[in-house]
Length: 429
View 1 (cartoon, rainbow, N blue to C red):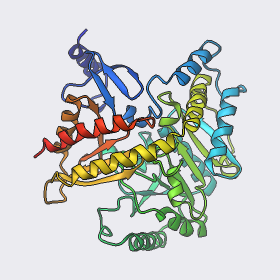
View 2: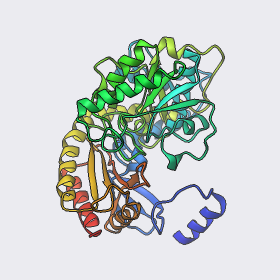
View 3: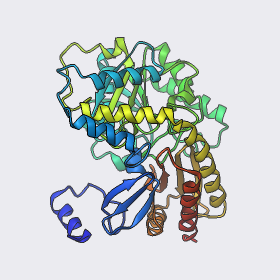
View 4: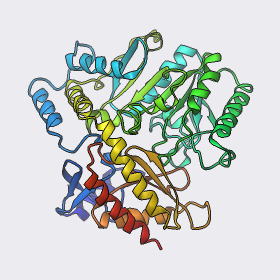
């Protein structure tokens, strides 16, 4: 069966809105380390890791061994029974969370994790009003879509929640873009105070420390700490969506919220993607009083299943023992500086941003702030043609390239990928 045959079958049985990258979509058949291969035998350097899910490496022996051994014992039993791997991973996650008296609930995805966080916050606060950031993305469930501040990923205006959108998630666009970092934070805080003066007290603010689907945008460090002062005075919870930023990807911190940690950790943290290195794990961390506020029964059929927990334990152990956070800081720092040097010579590049191994390259029509989605698509294709896979996103017509390799990326691989990206960007001229 050819790739064209598979594409035809895909289109006949799967939804039209299920997006595929590339004019000629590729089938990835296997991977190793930071590389993957397609069904034609072509080898690619992977700078997107299955949308940031392959956090450490493809086919990491420690993870595949743990999964294989667990599969030979039992794969699944549900949360109705004691589950040793789930308890062990929850203990480790609670320990590294920074949240006092933490409780952990495992889900199957980041969407489900954020959905659970919203349930906890609204039940605890007895309010269905949520503050969210403009340009945000939190998943594809009904409630998560209802708080998503990115039109490209919001297929309905219906929602079980009342959502109010706050300034600050994007530093270089919007009415405060021209201000200094300190003045930007002050203006956003005053806007938040003004907003809260016109509504009933919300349940929570949910925010990504670095907006993922939004194109790896972020506010100045300290914004959410400043927000928290305002929120805490009113009893409003802070939910940090760490689905993409967690587990050391930003290099400088283990969690993205730590760049905003002056006033303590969030009340709730959600995570997913990288923790399972491709296995389907998500979860919620919260203080016991919040996690235990539900007054009805609840379980998770597939959240915390033994085989995914085994993968998560092995992956987290490898990440910590090999200091992949430090590697993300060192190699990511080299990569972003290399890309900024290239960008200075390419008129289409509006900004190179990010930290660690979470880098965004925003494209715009030369000499303007107008998004250039066609240019972004062209760079994606040109990079693929030379053996590099990257992602794209952004709240302005999907004109940001997303670079997020596995955290074990070597300096040589970073240089190889940067050289391919340079040629792909220069091809726009």
